[in-house]
Image 1 (cartoon, rainbow, N blue to C red):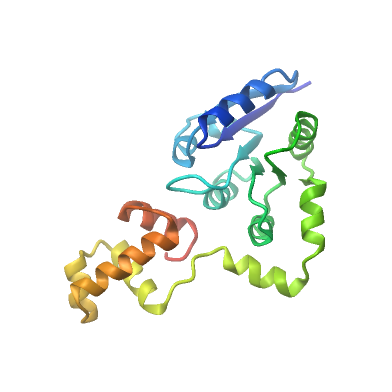
Image 2: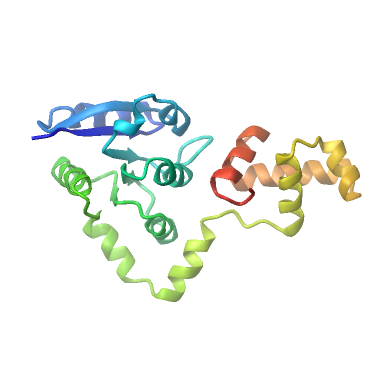
Length: 215
């Protein structure tokens, strides 16, 4: 039987090591990559050989949502299984819209996890009963609004400043271009950092590009 090549990305080292240890004992599983961040994962030279990617959602610099978008675009054959404690319906639905292949909560037992990995590797979708039950209680109207809410909500001014930041303009240049004060630009920049959950300009621009908020 062909082994299933697996990559795991999670910023919690104990969980990452524990999960890797559990799965490496499964006969037809082969753990090829373990990474503590999306950036580390994307830099792996053998990423294209992966069959199933197991990813958390909350990670620094680039979260599992942005990572899923990149993987689906650049490596469409890789199946994505989200393993997270996030129970928010809007997050789950946003990931489903991105065509991830499965979603489990982190408290899933080994048997369920093995079944999920095997199933998605075979081209099936796999969502635990806990996930399905959460989705049953939402209607189509909630679905549409929730899926949109996963993206940062920006004012027209914030988007304008974000685009200028992406073009490489300094704070002073942006202030001169938009005829606003230096302080106002700095204030908007800090709001953008907060909304995108980043702490530096390079991460802000990268995440905005990954989420296709700017081109």
